[in-house]
Image 1 (cartoon, rainbow, N blue to C red):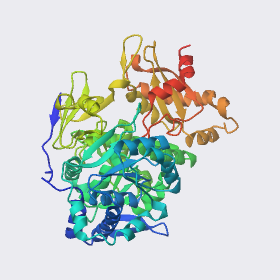
Image 2: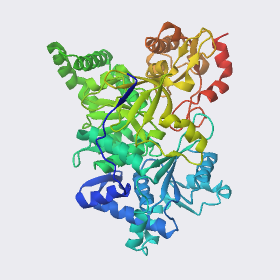
Image 3: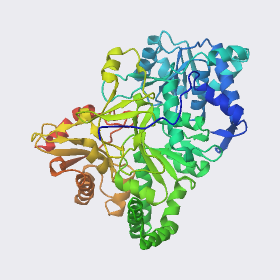
Image 4: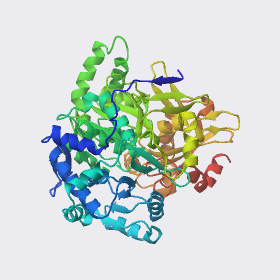
Length: 597
């Protein structure tokens, strides 16, 4: 199939903007807990729809008192926490436009985003963030105000806005219509300067409204809840934030992924948002714990049963009686404990950013925790395709967002059309025209549509390798499979213009010491450990698993372990954890050459 679309399930309001959502909630569900924040004891404190609206209004009045006018841009640099959502809606209530900045951004990146967007104010989380902004402030002539959350920014704004009349606030809140910019999200960019994607209130209405309607049982007011721990500066987290408010369901925001297990246990969400690496870590940690307790064989049998059970759900006859009995047994022994790690109440998760992998997808569905994979970009306001809760196809990223169309171009590129798309790149008409050729947004991704309109992403157009033998290779397919192994942190396939495909691999800092101890290698470190035959054989198993997904001509023939990590700080990953292939290839050119020596 070359093109597929679904009718819209949600009608975007003719006028109005996202602030209408919090006013509607306060009117229709005044006493409903809609958001939770941390209290002094580290627990969760619920705010009702009425209370949240009051805090947003007070904060927005402070922004107006500081001189913020409709259409102004305000930077927001913080980890995922209650104040992020509060300030986002406050900026919109002041009629302004939010410009997210990753809290890990360098001063140079901060300067570019604030100067390119023309921000007149910026809210940061910490004193260190404020110092980073101050270090480039001489290059930000339009930046008038800088507020710091940890130094009482919200309270100070509320105090300074007490003299702003309600009528003035209403005038500001109503200044933006559906087609006005809501935010400018700068792509993290694997090459060159980030581009600012202008996303309108209409785009978020179209995207979130249709997501909520298509996944309605997961967004039931008064029953549903979601814990958000991904960066809200990323459009994926932002979309879920707005969808939760739109439903409305209870929203919790967790700033520290290292506390995720505790936060899941305390908040007990019904819906979890994550990326494949999170779900891989949960599985690998559970398996390693079982092995450490001498229960590795039981866990593996339970995992095989879960996968077989999930696969059987897709057959006409369903799981056999014997399989159902085994599944029931392992549900008591293993699956229930895994669901408890995820909070104990969640039945579904939404995953994006990369491929989860078919085997892991079936495993999670088999234990009673279905991971709905989706696909999207900053330019598509996050999900432009996702799996429906009642008819998921494991291994695909689902059907198009209702009200939108996916087309596969002649060269295999995924093309998009719909109300949820961005308005253009800020101050960059040439890039906008190039991306929106012939009225279709060109994603740069390669994919296929099956007979039911389910999309599968097979790689990036610009990342396709062509070996010396003329074979086209999409790196993502095999990289995702190799990366799923507990020992592997990152994997980058190479081979453009070379006689065969090879890979650079970094090892997981958490699992490598555990593996070394279990295999009597604790005395080895550095180069000696990386050259250990048993370790190389274990990584070869990961490579073999990746090779099973591709043809021989596309398979990895050799690999090299690196005694380092690909991180954002090292410059090898973007804030959204995508590989900067050009940087890796340049920095590790000798290692790549050694693969072909």
